Length: 306
Figure 1 (tube, rainbow, N blue to C red):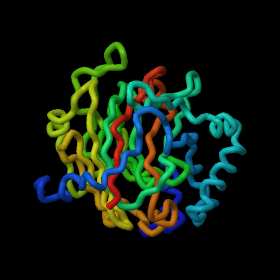
Figure 2 (tube, rainbow, N blue to C red):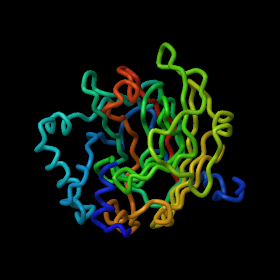
Figure 3 (spheres, rainbow, N blue to C red):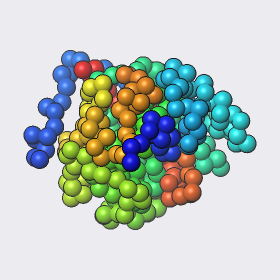
């Protein structure tokens, strides 16, 4: 059955060898631009984590420029609207790192966005997530924060790390693998192992194995993410500590995601977008999605415009 543009955008709102499969690794150092000075949040701003209401047809054809105001007005009409719009999370800088967490007793998330927008780029940063938390790195993000392509850092039971999720742009899940682990005192994790996917997903053009990840990942320590995003319909490639994790060509998603409309996505988010760091809501998963008091830390954030 053919899927209409309306059905696609409704779905949007609901939520080879590695050496040959990937672009050349590393960008020219001379073009590297720091996005974080290690001391302040200059160049960044926080926004609430609000979603496009599922199945709300009012947003089907709203342009990228008008989408933010339209969604905020819809959220404001809800009983919890004021809290949602005012809650921008807790973001601070300590010991040369950005620390993101929830406002206590809210269970509500937030995003921290770059002031600047980017189109084609290679991004590098280091992350040290507590366990369990559900976070990620948004690329080509709309000014709402939660509309765009998310490189997942779901550091929790049955979480995906290094894959890509289509936040309000098709709701697709391109997971290379799913992890599980044993929570220890101090938001640490032990015994990382294979988990169980909590929803349908697919493997993109290239996917690392869980064993590749386990050999590369440093538990309870800093890990480097490298993300390359190129093209009007973006090709997204990720590495963790130098190990290729996935290569996803979003121009080919219609072959794998029923009803995926690449042109509708461009209309929704534009050709360029923000980089954003995520603090997730708790939702139905409760503390298993974000334990009270847990945080994610980010440092050495730099970008090369391509």
